[in-house]
Image 1 (cartoon, rainbow, N blue to C red):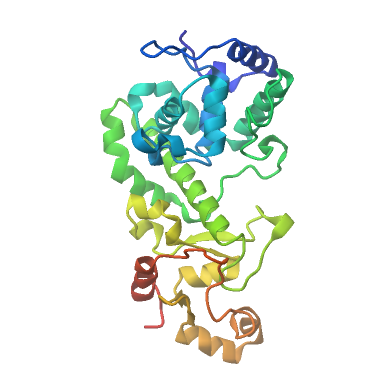
Image 2: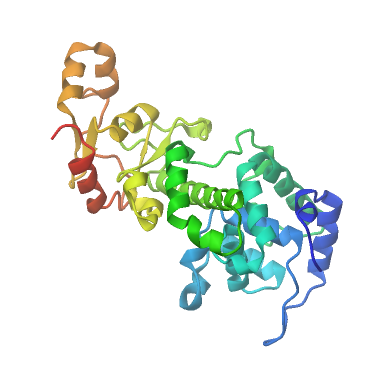
Length: 327
């Protein structure tokens, strides 16, 4: 059955409940038989999964290692985990033959997070009313519809220049697949922003949601931009793989994030924190600078949870050689 964007963007709780009942009656297709088309609730949840799972990491021999939330939804949908990762790739724009309208749908919902938040809430409420438990249909975004802040994480590093660079890197391949200029820009922006969100979640989690320079933890105020995920090797200088590598990241409070980004701070291969000569001089002259960057404010070494891998040496070397202003 052909669908248009309104079937997804204007989904009501009643529509969602009817689709969940349809899924209840579904049986897993026999080998070699074509599976049923994805319903809007399934497509929309696959879009939501893009915020927490990279579909590029799973396929073939390791498909059985997909995260629990994806595996649970696949079982509930009576589908293979691979069918969900394939749908996610379609939505992300990596496999445009999967449906141009799905790419544009995902791009629209990435930009308008409040619209997706409302749809996500309706889908979950309808699932519960249809009898699906948290184990069967997990709330993998943590009640997104009830949160005041529904923005993607880690977007501070993504400005107009970064988006133009991303379009120049991948836009030609997308345009050759039938997307116009404006559509190509929207799809590239979607991919960059979702990738940056996944990167930020992984980096903040690796640092136990604490600043690696001073140990500050926002706790219940998390999500208010009091803790940022910063690239060690700058985003614009990184390859597409390096931009998404959590070991190219440091969690930092805004003051220490800014100082690290402009090269006033760096970290060596032994994780020791170093100040630039200019910052050292300012600390001597200014009491305010001393409170933020002095001996009592900064840790001697990067603060990490036990057994955490931390930033990879190759990225720390790049920062020290090309960003740090103290050489």
